[in-house]
Length: 322
Image (cartoon, rainbow, N blue to C red; front, side):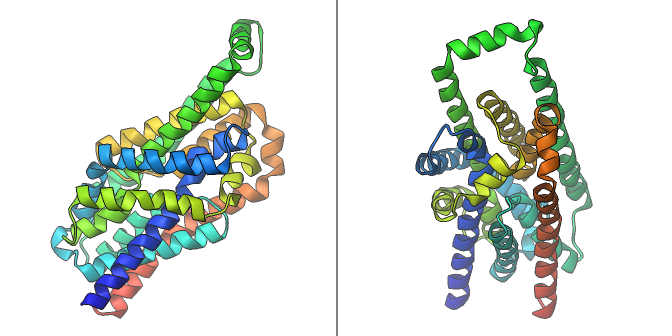
């Protein structure tokens, strides 16, 4: 039993570190890609605001993951270990491939795999969650498209905007970094629960204590993972400018916090990438075409990694006869 708990703790730490490595990309890739902040400062700010977000709003999502998808009586330490291990392995593979992956997707699909094994999948909660996964990234795309269309390209109707930008560069730079911190706060509010939820479901720890202990590991994970993942979003898909990075950050973080209030795990990676692609359709269509291979790789990993997490969870439970 002690050995099982040691493995479970190791799986949680491994998962949290990988979530931090994956999460720092969509939070600070815009500011980093625009050259506004160094990697070291990005990691430090990311760590602080993830903890703040987790303590402020993380319990809502943790409750959903601990009992909303899989009945609480089916959550045992062994089931929690299999769910977390399946999600962590899938996320680790995505990080190795240098593609930001949704921590929420791999976690929820791992829970789905367990629920299918026990024939206890909650269809209403599943439909609500998948619907939100589809709707919110599209909302982010269209909000970013409409907002950015209003200020780009420069024309007589929006010339005043560019005059303000050129006369107030320093405040706008600070605003861009603040918006990245806002994204890190949103990650804490939503994604830390991916590791806490299964533990709380197995009644191994309270959601509040779990959020407090696990959220600092995100910052460590952001420090351990190299900056190639941030470059994938911030530079290889669409190189972002100063104003663009701020727009993308505020829109995606707000949508993620909205999902947190509803208590649903939501993918910041997809929210962020779709918003960036909205900018690309207006400002850099030729760049998107040139980076078509990177985009295809990103979408392929988005699809395969969650399915792998669900399959691993289902097969492991079946193999062990749980």
